[in-house]
Length: 595
Image (tube, rainbow, N blue to C red):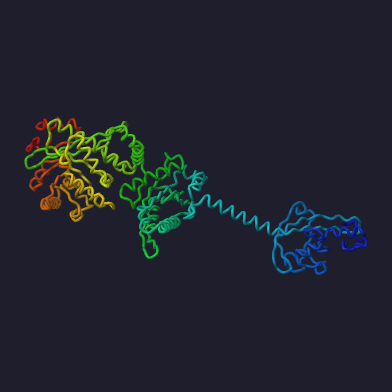
C-alpha cells in the first residue's frame, strides 16, 4: 500500500481514488471480511476498512488519529501506546478481549505486520488484521467445560460425588501414597453400611440414595486435606489416610467417621439411624502396595461384621490368616458337597431317670483335604454366605439317616436321632416331604427322628413359613426341638405360637451351674415350666459330676455332653453302645445302659 502513499509525508489514504489501481485496491480491501486497521507507531488510527468499522462500531472519521488501544479497550482515548518493533506480536496470533463502541465485548484475534516506508520522508506503519472469534472461543470454552465434566465423571461417583475406583487407582500411584507406604505412614478405613437393604426395602430406593449421600458427607467431614474418600461400590466406602502412622491415630479417625455416620439422617417425616462397620489397616513392612492395604482392610471389615457389626476391627496378621482360610473354604465348599467330603459324627443323649441312652445327635463334619476335619462352627456361616446351606442340610440329612439305618441293623431300635435343620431348609416347603421320602426309603419312621431348629430361626422374617414346616413335621410324627435355648434371643413368650416337643438348654448356661446360683435357679425354673407345657428338656454341654448332680436335683430328664461321650463316627458309636461300661467319663456312679 505504500506504493500509493502521498510523498509529502502525510498519512496515506487508501480511499483516495486518484489512481485506478488505488481505487481497485480500496474496493478489494473493503470487501475483506476481516477487519483491517492501519496505524502509526503510536497506535493512532490512520485508516480502516468497512469490516473494521462494523467490528468496532466506530466510523473511520470519528476515530482517525486516535489511539487504537483506547478505542478497543474502552479506555481514555488519550491513552498512549507505542509499538515495539522487536515485539514477538509480529510473529504470532494475538487473542484479546476487546470492546465495541456500544460497550459489548468480543474476542479479537489479531495479526500485526510492519509496513516499511518506500520514501525517506515516510514513516513506518503497522497493519493490524482483526477477526471476531467470539463464537469460536465460546465453543472451545464449552468444549473444555464438557471435557472437564467428562473427566470428572470418569473419576467420580455420580450419586455421591466421591472418587470412584478409577480415581482410587490413580491416587494409589501418586508419589504421596508411595512415600507414605515406604515410611509406613498410611492407613485405610473400609466402611460398609449395616442392614442397608432394610432401608431400601422399608423406605424405598430414594431413601437408600439419600443414605449413601449422608455417608458421603460424613466421609468428607472426617477427611484430612490429603485423604481420599472413595465410594468403592454399592454401600461400601474407602477412606485413604496418608500421614497416619499409629494404630491409635487410625482408630481415632475410624471413631470420628462412625460418629459422623451415626448422626440422625432425616428422610421425609422419618429419622433414620445409620449404622456401619469399619475394617481398618495400617501400613507395615509387609505391605507392598496400596491394594494390599485395601485388601487387609477388607479382611478386617469381614471380621467386624462377624463380631456383631456397628464397630471397627483392626487388621492383624492373625486375623488375616483366619480370613484367608475362610476365603479358601468359601471357594472349596461347593466342591466338598459335590465330592462327598462331609461325614457325620454321633453324640449320645442319656435319660437320667434310668441312665439309658435314648438318643443321639448327628453332627456334621467337613473332612477338608488341607485343613483336616472341620467342625460346623467353622463353615456353617460360610455355607450360608455361599448360598449352599440348604444343600448342606440335605446332605447332612441323608448321611444321618444312613447312620440311623446302620444303628437299626445293629439292633439298636430305640435310639432317636436328632437332625439339625437350618432356617433356610426349614423355610423350604418341600423339606417335610423330602424327609419323609428319605425315611421311607430306608425303612425308618418319622418317630425315629427329632428335628432341631435354632432359637434364632423362630425370629426370622419368614418365621411363619418355619412354623408351617414345624406343623407338617409334627403331623408326620416327627419330634421338634428348640436348640441352644437360653442364648438370649427368644423365650417362652416367643414359643407360644410354635408347637415344640423339646428344648435344649445351651451349654453356656450349664457351664455356670456350679458357680452361679442364679443360673441354677433359672435352669430349675425352665425345667419346671417346660414340664408344665408338656415339653421335655435336654441339657447340653454336661461335663462334670457336679453339673450332673445339680441337673438331677432340678429334675432335668436328659443330658448330652463330653462328660458322657464326645461325638464319634457312626461306626464307633455302634461299638460304644456295646461297651458302655468301659467308657472313660466322670459319671462313674451312673453308668448308662443301652436302650
